[in-house]
Length: 213
Image (tube, rainbow, N blue to C red):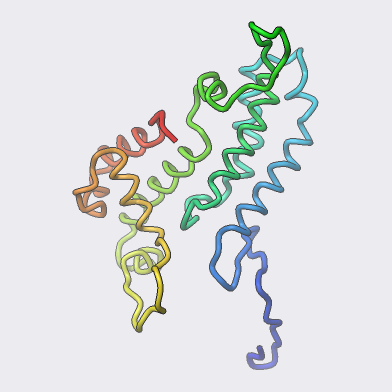
């Protein structure tokens, strides 16, 4: 593609400000890239997470302050969570390194912790809960920007033309409505609800601390 005297190569994906953008507007490649970065970050502190000299509470703090921010950078704008299973697998791998194996009382053998056991041991919200709450918190910020801001116009705007045949893809705003349904506010206008900062902040907290997948 040529614009004035500049030539731009047509590609299927590229990185912009650390974010992977694709010609299909798919978030899958971005999540894969974030997981690779998180794995590289894990290997840099692997000795600490597997050391018996470091307490489990400190290991969790290392995971939440060093590794998790790398994986979740920009997660507020992720449109869907079709890749949430990969995120869960990644987090469970981290938690198994932190908590270690467990000795079976019947067989007397060491085994890996099950997902349910990890969920009981890890008292903090899981990675998907964190993403949902961050996205909902960002939605509240956008609603206060007003019509003069481009982000707000993109959020409430309706594109012209006809969409292609087939089931429409889930939109970013559809996720917000689903989260409100989880906390029992599905029947309310979320843009109007977000104008009450205190109540919106309480909903974000309630969504994060739900103990369900």
